[in-house]
Length: 358
Ligand code: AVI
Image (cartoon, rainbow, N blue to C red; front, side, top):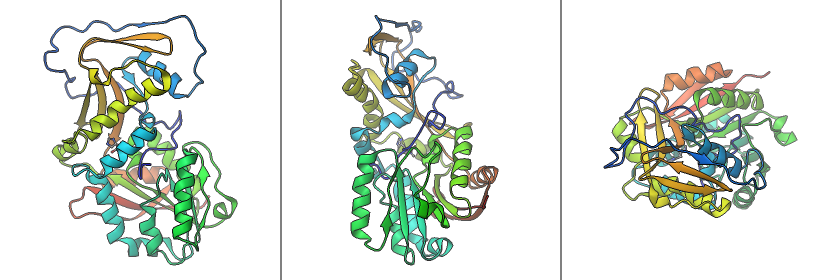
């Protein structure tokens, strides 16, 4: 399971990829000079409609709209989570190791901010690996509530933490943290520190990121949030991080199509689609797309969809922040920004944000 993946996302808080393609010239595969045919979708006799908000319903909606776009939350089935774990270990993908280094090097200072006997809540905990750096530095941490939408992964990581930290009361919460949720009573009534790592905030569009921060502030009122976010940097570094030489990010991206084949009986041939990731400096975000290398017809849940050559399915945005920009976003969400910890190259940042009571 991922250690810092997007989890617990919802319709309102879906990491968003819905906007039209921005400034950079539209990507075209080699030889894609013919004018595009207008893609069509053809309804077939109605079968049972997939449940609203399910992968099937969202995939149908994504393929029917223009531009085509789907939430990156669907990357994270078991195969996608395993691929994301591999991404985190790639030489080009600096965020994970940089955030781990920042947390390790500043663990004492962070522990002082958190204080003794702490109650911690990790949002999108997944494998709950990074929190171990905090737990090792904290003085007598009291309770830990890992929050994740995936019950199975949560059970495994909570059991491992309970085994490794016998004095810690581990209270896993299966929940979508972008929707109203409750914390276990003891934690809800104590001063609590939230932990939201991995720059998962960057997978939400700015409006939803603000809404999410507001709801986290309300949930942590009287406590604080420790938030890891990726920083704006040399586009070449960003480009490499999302276009690794081993092709793991490409496989992660294409796994979405494989997942649709496995779970929805679609007939995508992932080889028909190129992984395309680029940095848009104006929006300060990486965009990931799957681009049809030729004219492709796909069947999904009784419907047929045509892709013109060069047409894309937009699969992810990953926003990058400036330190000041993040602090002002946090202020707008009602936090009082405190210390910020960075690596020497200023690739990544970890923010201490006080959540005022009430
Ligand atoms: C989970 N999230 C913060 C990652 C990111 O960098 O936006 C997901 C990812 N996509 C491609 N590589 C990694």
